[in-house]
Image (cartoon, rainbow, N blue to C red; front, side):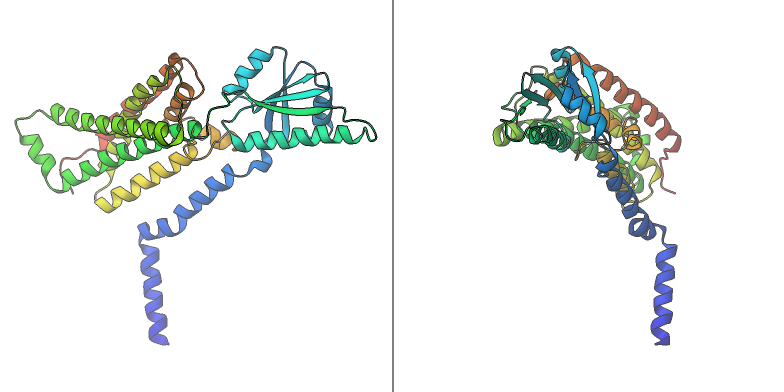
Length: 349
């Protein structure tokens, strides 16, 4: 028993002293617990709904009973309200046509749309119950602001494509840099007659080619297998992917400059890319997430890549909407590359 306890203690101390094992066994899962706990804590988040004109039963019930669940905004113009819902600013726009309550909702976020429909159904049901013995006073109908032929793949594909580009760009740059350094290839390239700029440009072109191939595969498979429908300015996704690839290459360059081994590179890139994918809405929408999570997401390059592709490929926005996103991504690439050069080394220590 004494030998068992001694060996167990030695193994435990070895585990505690191994920072990598300690991080991935304890702190890494805790980080995801915080992320998922915050993202899925919908109970503290309100659903934003637009009241178009006067809908007395809606405003009265929200103020009286549903103020913790719904945030009510007022519009007088139905067209502007529908545009706001289509852009994702609000979940639904509600108008009253005589005894019919019409809720125009967005399919971009099925969770919040379902929540809004459930609450609106409860409001109308309560009003009808008060008119016992008479025909229902109010009827509730739902109408999607998007084309009824659009499928869920429209909203899933941009986020997954962004995540794929982020993963390949970051992993490719980081792993290449570490492998070249450890194999002394970087030093040989430095001494070779080929200018360093040509080597860097070639690596960038390869990464851009891979990203464009990913884009073609995603869009092609989406159209052929899942009924993906592209908007008029869908092509704007291509320059967005190019700018995003440059941004993720800069992250990979920084990770490769810091990491010393292949194992450390894989761990570091996973720590960067996976949380960023969740915080950027690649897997699940963040509209119902707490404000602090949405604030963090605004500084992440993947958020701007996802939003740019979602606006131009799904929401039917003009191609000019993607220009600010491209500018942010390119600016991010310049800043992170400048930081990475401060850590760059030709030889492994």
